Length: 352
Ligand SMILES: [Zn+2]
Image (cartoon, rainbow, N blue to C red; front, side, top):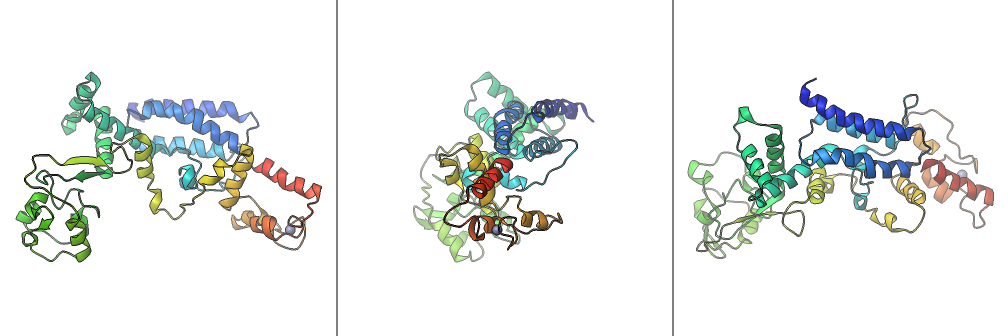
């Protein structure tokens, strides 16, 4: 293990010892989630805001958080009822908002890079600039972090066109639809490759398509034509962060971009459950229920645990979340039997 890795390992050990100190306490699922977000995540955040963490260390921190959340200890492993990626989504997107380490680290570094570029007169920003300009063989851990942050900022930014003279037509992200070169296959000739936006814009609102040696697809042409370019302007094109209204990256928007949850298959809109004024345990139970993650006998069967799955209340159907809350003739009758009602509440208590 290299020295760098050993230094990061100490951060992992701090998180682990904090988690170990909680394991003797009888914490609920909601309590464990809260502790991860409030305490152990902030131990790593302090270092993550300036240093690029090795991927293995990020995975290690995530594993500690994941195991603690589901109540693992050395003797017993528990089933993970919701996958980690979904747990790390923001609450508004159906997750618990527990930070995913790698993406969070990159978001911090994006913010650091952006600040170093916008607060250039400050002594710390000058140190960053020196680090950023070091040649490949002399790069420090700070330069590596800044370069990673720069890449995140590049990915999340779009160029606001004024004169179009500073922006490469094909390879920079200025058009709403994305980087044009990524939508075109095959080689471009050298002259075309070097075109700037102002070379193709004839005047404000009109375009000189003859600059391009082939026919652009109509949707792409329409996207391009929607950009107003004033070639006579002396105003430089500017880079704007796309993921918030401020136009400059903050940790929250950069983290959300890195998670890329909009493209995921599990984008649930469950933000409303956190606004209901009930005990936190009930909210967490509702969250598990709506994610179909209550450990009913049917769910345990589907995870390979071979137990009889008959509902113990009505003895006439497989025990699943849908059965318990919608179909079971005992739990859904108009006059709840106190004992059975209590039974459902105990499920809330035990699970969450
Ligand atoms: Zn039943």
